[in-house]
Image 1: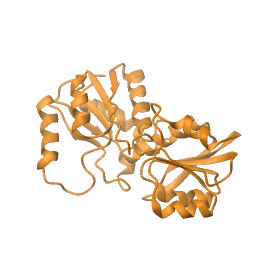
Image 2 (image 1 turned 120 degrees about the horizontal axis):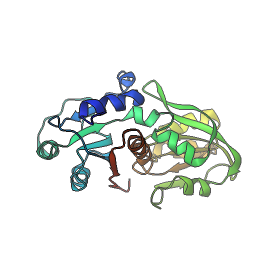
Image 3 (image 1 turned 180 degrees about the vertical axis):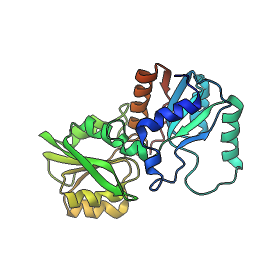
Image 4 (image 1 turned 60 degrees about the vertical axis):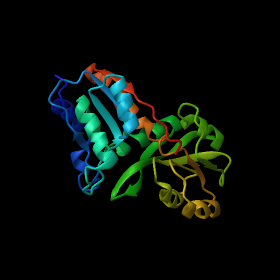
Length: 255
């Protein structure tokens, strides 16, 4: 397969179910900024469509950048200020920007939540956590109970500490639910499902007492750190299936 952006778009859509999420995700999944038709020799993978990420992709000579958080989120934006500068940068360097949001959170093998569930060692995995009418998280059980400290170690990325650890429940954890990113409110779904541990990206004041009073352990691993996993899984899939050069661009926000 010639690695044109048209062919790469078809490749990504063949397994990421982008079109099936059109009713639930308005973040303009797919090609957001195209190149001039040139064959892509290298794909960079990152979490955010930021200038810093673009500069790193250019520094490693990538012809395409695949991200989880793109430039557009369902509402028209004026091409001014830093948005204009970002698009100008991509066009001048002929870099295609490709973004995948909810389909990458939900994917049962390569998604953020599926990889987190695998890292934790969950078994008997089922869909969890409704978002815009779709269950994009996962829940499951452990073959042997673990501690919250062990869970933190299993999901940490590059040794970076989580934003918050809330040991409000059982010391020996037998079940968990995962929902990456800004999904703190799904702690209430975790409570309803009776799991021992909820793993997400960001914590939120409004669920603190719900977790405390219902004895739910929670780990807020960081929005960024819980969403590196999907792009990295897709990166490995691309390298294996297409034989194309790939590189992960790590731009941590600490959030």
